[in-house]
Image: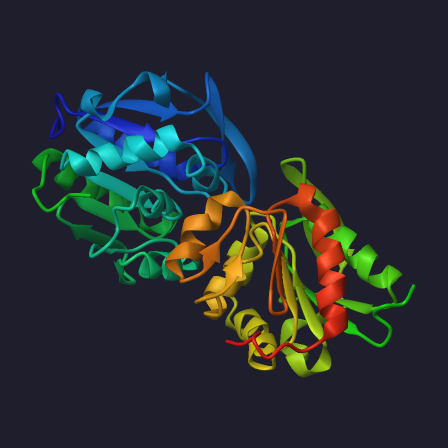
Length: 186
Length: 186
């Protein structure tokens, strides 16, 4: 299949990403013909997290300060408790995330990934889910949080944890294929 | 010195606590004569975090579901990115934290520790600080966040990171010595 032919996807991550939440969406996107790029504030490689400890590295394709949201059609944000806690302190990464919303481009975020949506200030009035520990932070930011395996709101796809990856990948591919959504906005 | 003679302090923590943020406040409190108890949802031991990786264990004195805020005069919450992310999902731990505010007892929290204050719903209108990554979450919860080494607000003592520990310990001891504060409330 090639539902995502000519679709360029950025995966924004840094050290401490939950390994399966990066590798499985990447595989699902590439299987549909998307071009997928690992974008990070780090150079070269970033280290994953698996079963409660550090795991394998993945190669970084471009540093976040060397690219722009205009280079991509869609954005995917993996979780892991350490990864977004580091990313949200990097203002270039936060501005990169916000640009996808300004441009109405689809975004998929899983687990702790939605912490970056709080930091970018794009959650007010949106319906979404996340890892349960950050539910209150998302609600306090103005989001409507619901406990489902995958939530789709106008080009914004969110899921709770690695066990939701099959549902997450399916809806992510649908929304990334549809492209821009007027209701996907900052 | 024994500024804290007959003062019983609970340190609430679980796996992934930033090692120095538990051991140094404990040492400072015990030096002033306080009785300090490590309270956790876990039995036996919890594992620390140091220099970006797992570190030494500390002994748990009592499980959180076997104690009550009435057993203690004050509460201390260490940080570490993993520790409060686990703790805030444990409703017994969240209720335990809230009880100290209901009872007007002093509380000290450092780094990511204030995530537990968000979860307990006790931050609205309070002035505090934290690790910079959770600043927006605290502001969204109604807190007034300021960038100082230690912030004291009516029995609530907060600091940003391990480098603030000397200032944090000093103010924690002052507030714990003073005891209950009318303005320390849920």
